[in-house]
Length: 91
Image (cartoon, rainbow, N blue to C red; front, side, top):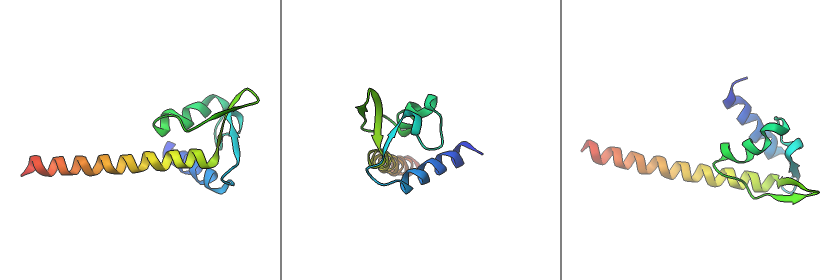
């Protein structure tokens, strides 16, 4: 399975969870405890809002999906700015 397919599977699994489902490091969809923080943080472009529950970092499915949606919107705006800049330089 490619990394892109794995990411798509994780996002699909998150979308299938109830919005208020609590995810901790061990319960991150499609990955191990070792990669949980990496999935929620670095790959998503920062850290989704997390809370400590029983001394462990936790997220709600909604918080993670909201965070990913914000990052996608930012990426779309960045791509539009880049395209405008390329157009300006090409003229």
